[in-house]
Length: 173
Image (cartoon, rainbow, N blue to C red):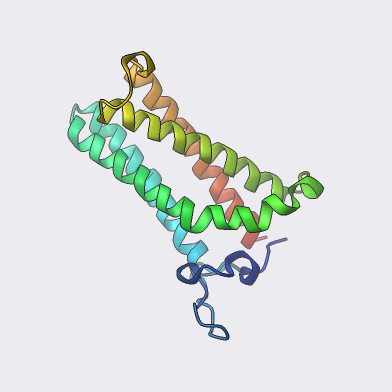
């Protein structure tokens, strides 16, 4: 029930299509119907998930500067991936058809992934503001660091799994 990679990635030149009309599209390399951009995004997301786990171990070993740099880098890279790959796909392939097809797994898992991903990214940005800056007033800051960071890591891993699920439902089945 996967969609064609032409419709998934149309208009996003670095993600899998050529910016020149009539040019050949870059094919994926993971052996599914996905284009190059979707395959690359999947591998980058898995690598970022692994980096977040490494970052958690850095915090556990009290290497807080390395932990902060690791987690912030993943957060910012993910923001770039969301804006250049995932949001355009969700906006063109899911949102316009969601009201008529929400019960279908193609739309349901992508919607779940998008909503949970947005919450995880926003929570991560909030944690970054609290932990790495003095921008927020004291009343808006949390003090139980471990709890919030563990919640964020759990959220991120759930989002990663729903993203992998989205990839397989869209391209492998």
